[in-house]
Length: 336
Ligand code: KG4
Ligand code: ZN
Picture 1 (cartoon, rainbow, N blue to C red):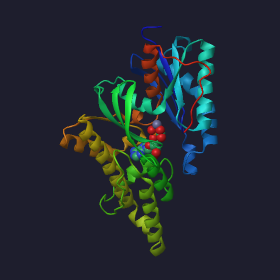
Picture 2: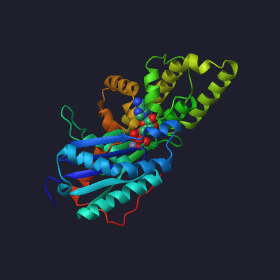
Picture 3: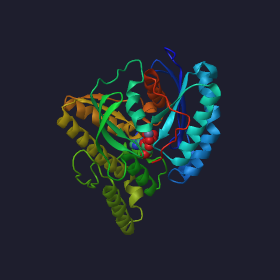
């Protein structure tokens, strides 16, 4: 095994195609290519997503190698997302990664997408340090909302999760419902900036322990808006910013409340955030203020490492490479 390997990371589990090269926990280059085509359908169309990954993977690998100033034969291992994710996308990406590794005669490392979101906190950045073990990680994305107790790189306990929709899913579905497009989180984030976060109130049910439930909350929003539209067809237009701000506020408060419960219970005062929703500007400010008040330490990632990215896949690849944890070429992906 090489002492300072170059690891090529490849991520394609949903609608972003991303390729990165890392060495020594530092990112040489990380490119994220978002498939804007899903804007028109209001959500990811699996068949289209996988075809776009197929189209984009080769040029992205070429581009990343060029920008990293290294040659393909210098890559020591390929790490790639094994799951969870969209079945078609995973099949395209894993096959691509396996065949590339086979042709280079180098090992492959399959990576769990959520584990990668968590361990992305160990990407080495200038001006930023990684959380010490143990820490509490809130991973909030389009498909997951989980609170995880991270005791070591590969020793994690799930403390709580959503029992229905993920937080990002609510952002996306509300955005679609309001006719704002996909992906919804970033659009709602922008509009919410101009709104009154205390104008509308929707209730999130209290679920036991550290679990979440957003499905009823989402239905309340839909029902309320349908009712209001029946009375006034301009309701959404007249209240768009306030609706976005209020909905975002309620989701963020609920996320913090549960994380804070986990902090109280475990007495671990280090909180790390990861996943696409953790790039939300209001969420970042809210957690920043709230953790200061509760004397907890907050770890945020730069936006491009909060959303789906290949650098996080490569980091797990590096950690597994050091341990000699490689996969066989008959490894198969696991969908959602
Ligand atoms: O982690 P990610 O890139 O992909 C998944 O693993 O799902 O997360 C995507 C999710 C989407 O639901 C998207 O709407 C949400 O993250 N998201 C945001 C923001 N940016 C992306 N949600 C709220 N505010 C944002 N600024
Ligand atoms: Zn993700």
